[in-house]
Amino acid sequence: MFSTCIVLFIFLPLGKGGGWLRSILKRVNSAYHAALALSKYHHSTLTQHVNAYSVGAGAGYYDLALQELQTSLPRPSVWTENLDLTHSIGVFTTILHLLFYESCSGGKHNWQIHLGGANALLQSLVQAQMGSAIARKDQTKEHQDRAIPHPDTSTAFLLGFFVHMHIITGASTRSSQFLISDHKVLLETGEVNLADLTGCSNWVMIAIFEISSLDKWKKEEEDAHRLSLGDIEFDLSKGAPVDAHLRPESIKTEITRIFALSAIIYLRVVISGPYLDIPDIKRSVSKISDALQSLPEPKLLQHVVWLYCISGCLAADGQQKVLRELVSLPRITHRTCLEALSLMEECWRLRRTESSNHDWASIMERCGQHSLLI
Image: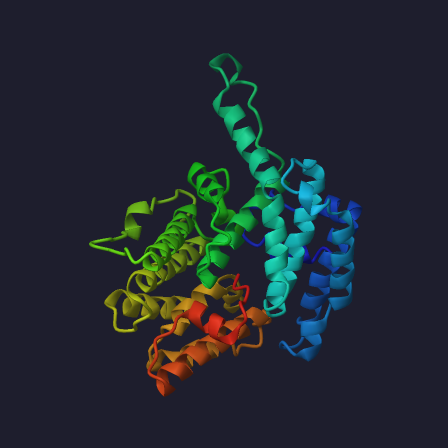
C-alpha cells in the first residue's frame, strides 16, 4: 500500500518522509482506496511494459475512492467557506492520488473534474500556509527565540503539488482556467518549494506562470482587435538565482534546466507561433532532446512529460527518431508518456501532410481531448 509514497516523495530530502501521509491513509477511507488504486497500477507495471491490463489495474479501488470522496465532500454551495483544515488535507490527499492515477493511466478522463474540485477547496491550504508566514514575519525581536513553526508538512507538500499541477496544466492546455495569482505569491515568497517536490526550482515555474499570463493577455487583446506586442521580450536568465542547494551533480539542476528551456519554447510559441525556424525554438528543442537522452535514470522522463511533449511537437525531422526511442524503453510505465508521443506524432503528421503549424494545445483541441501532462 505504501509503495505509493515512493512516487510522491521522490525529490524530498531524507527526514521529510511520509509519516503524515501514512496517518491520513489509515483514517481517511477515500485516501486509502485511492492509494491502493495507484499502488496496484504500479505493481502491475513492475514486471511488464504498459498494456491493457496495467491500464485498468486498480480501477475498482479508484471507483471506490471516488464514491467515498463524493460522500465526504460538503455541498458545492459551501465549498468557498473555510473548511476544517484536517478534513481538507484528507480530501486533497485523495484527489492527489486520483490525479496521479489518472496521469499514470493516460491522463485523458476525469482529471479536469478532480483538479477543478481541488481548486474550489484550495483556499483553505493557501490561508494555512500564508497565515503561518505572516505570523512568523510579525514576530517581535523579544519573542524570536520562540519561533513559529511552518504549517504541518502535509500542507506545504499538498499545496506545492497543486501549485505545480495548476501551472503546468495551464501551460499544457494554454487555458487560463487554473491561472491563480496566489500561486505566484507562494512561489515568490518561498512558502512553496517546488525543487524538493518536482526537481524544478521556483524561479522557472514563476516564469512559466508569467508566460501563461502573457498568453491570456494576448488572446484577450486579439479578441478585442487591439493587440500590439511591440518590443515585448522576456529574459529567463534574469530570474535564475543560483540556489545553494542545487549543485551540478544534483538531479534537480538538470530538471530545472529542462524546465527553463521549455519555458523559452513556450514563450516563443505564445509570441510568434509554433514555427520550427525560430532560432530560440530550434536551439531549445535540440538542447532538451540532448538533456532528455542524458538523464541518469530513464524513468525520470515520467516527471517531465509536458517538457517532452512541447519540445517534441516542435522537433525537426532528424530529431523525431530519438524522441520516439525515449518512450520505447521497457522501464517507461507512465502511460501519459505514450499520450505525449501520440500528440507529437499527430503534430508531425499534420506538418508533413498539410504543411500546417500546430503546437501541443492546438493538437489537443483538434483531437477534442485534453491530456494531463504532469
